[in-house]
Image (cartoon, rainbow, N blue to C red; front, side):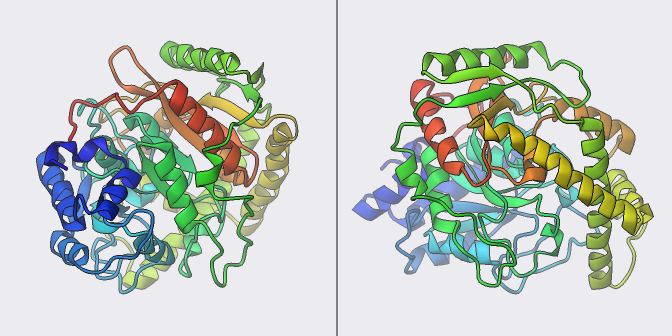
Amino acid sequence: MSLPDYAEHDGLSLAELVKKGEVTPLELVDAAIERIEKHNPALNAIVHKAYDEARDVAKGKLPDGPFKGVPFLIKDLGTEVKGWPRTSGSRFVSNVQDTEDSELVARYRNSGVVLVGKTNTPEYGITGTTESALLGPCRSPWNTNHIAGGSSGGAASAVAAGIVPLAHASDGLGSIRIPAACCGLVGMKVTRDRNPNGQNDHDRAIGFSVDHVVSRSVRDSAAMLDATGYAEPCSPYATPAKARPYMEEIMLSPGKLKIAWSSETPSGRPVDPEVQVALERTVDLLKSLGHELTPKGLEVDYRTLYRAQGAVSASNFAAGMARRIEMVGRDPEPGELEPLTLAAMQAGRRITGDQAMWGWQTLRLLNRQILATFETYDVYLSPVMGTPPPEIGYVDPVNLEPKEVNKRQGKVFPFTPPANFTGQPSLSLPLWESESGLPLGMMFTGRYADEATLYRLAAQLEKELPWAGRKPKLWN
């Protein structure tokens, strides 16, 4: 394989070349490193480089997993890699160095991937854009004036640019799906507890956050979830059951699905006209494939829903910050937390126990209302975002007042959070582009624990409307 061909392959294809002896893992690592050095000055996607370690690992004996020899990146938030720094995008904890691999990282290694570095993330993953005071803004390879999404923006930017074929990502309120939509990728937010959270998962206590990958192909997403998504020792929650490997699911027809669809937003404001057109084109495409489409929103009291979620999330964040303060041995000094982060911590500290538990109780009741939709419908379709990807600085957690940041986030990212509340799988697919050439993602949310239906549908759409031929300006 010649070096220029590297980015044309997905992860499974690169692993097949390794298996055939047509390329070595070291050659793949060197190809990824070359592309990091070429593109990262413009993208700021990779914030920690582990080149020497990656080369040493690539020269050694790798597990015979599905991604043997494939270069891979870890998000710099909440996931431990032995001997590597973990900043969480924050000046306050920028000196943390992990002493062990997390369970998820161990499973990634067992899949055969070679870890080459860490990717950019906003402070504590709070925003839907990756722009922090510590790590700086991450940019889209489609147009570097625009965001790569957040909080897995670094992962998405790197994959979209062809630096690696897939990368670790996590999603607490949309942080896999939003970057996938901004960068033209496949982004599956898996069911709660599908992937391991690890023994140090206190920040996962409310169950919103999950880990998986962003990828250029559906099959890479499916294969990696097969490799990582099995029962975790000592987990307090049962791993959701699946009928068969997801690599088998993508070979099956989805059949005729009943799909509800809507562009309703919590504010009631309409989405950008380009986004609405893309949604309606998706509806027409699905009808042409034999699916049954019904216009229907979630029909939930969004004001109460987000009031409840706010109480739960803020109190959880304040508790997490208390643990970080105990670890560091002092409170944050002025300037060590961004304004939005500081406001979130202070808001959480003001919430009383009964307010937090009211939030939990209310979320439980409203989650039941949301899940009732899936008693009738197989899939719920909406856009991922309310607008095309905005420019860097439009949703700026460093320089804007917190209220303005949240107001703008509500406009740009109105759709993703409910699936985190309910724990359902939810998938972003890169079906369309804006008039200016930016990706427009559509979101498909499935029944609880039913990634299988989403993967079957995704494979059908990838075949009918292939996106592999679309390349960003910064590529390979």
